[in-house]
Image (cartoon, rainbow, N blue to C red; front, side):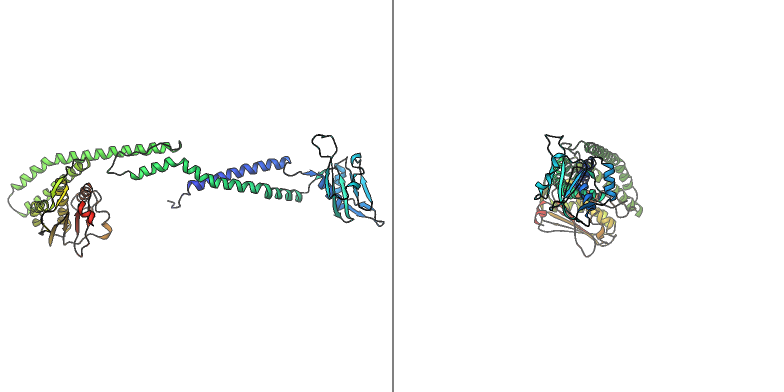
Length: 450
């Protein structure tokens, strides 16, 4: 799969807009060029250039014309060909039927370098002519003619290049500047609704379902995408709701068989087999309670009141003590300063602390001690096992995540702890320890001090 980044829309629109405008400009110039508005392919200057190259003087100093190929072609193609060539000494050379208006006008224009004669919009029937002084082999001469002749390809190229540099290039620069300034403004205003929808999409979270993208001010071409995303979000919400109902219903259904199972295990004679069964049944009970707690938390069923962390932790330690000892651990409890009141949901906090202890039982290595410490608005649970690899610290609070797929448990314990602490405005953090793993539940007061 290609890793190249797609160019920004502003950049793509700028270049495409500039390309279209350039193509239109080139097409207009081409039409003007072909129609003769840009370059006159046949004019009197070309005729003067042909005469200038052909004129010379004979031995007596009189003006004469050589029969050049260009002059021969001009005489053959233009039956009304006429011209007057003269110098300041009065030498004169002419050919063709000269309009009476220009027969003797040359003497009056000795001090004028060049002129166009007879060009009058109000009198289109008047013959026109071109006069120009130019250097030649016979010296500086005055050329007057009213006959047009085709331009050479080289002159056409020069004329077209000059037009492109003086006219087309400035127009193209102005078009490029306009597109450069206008394109970002147009894109920003046109896609304001898209940016708003992107911010809405970024705020959507699995814990806050029901979010949808707003289609206000969205371009019509992008509206189908917004509708498709909203449809996908609706289907995801329905899927999550079905999943949560399944978890809750399944957990409720499992409670009765588990109670029966525990009663039958309790009736068995004492043995290692009974201990193993008791542990497995307790673990199943924890999973069921975790599923129910997740459903209760997500449905907003918490009930906040003042809770004494020290008394709550002591009761949880007494309740789970038999499982700790049966798993081969010692259990240590310490309270700093006695009572530690916080405001929260008692059942949720008990479940969070129980899950941390259950996690320590499962991953503490089956030896050493488990430590529970209570302080002002915090509770620590630690073990003396192998600890938590640094690479897993960012993932262990994800739902259903397990380092080893074959390990016991459903991967819900630490996720539930994380949700409980978010519910209480606090956090669960991993303690830095030389050996073993440690977790701290920091409630709102402690979180403010940390």
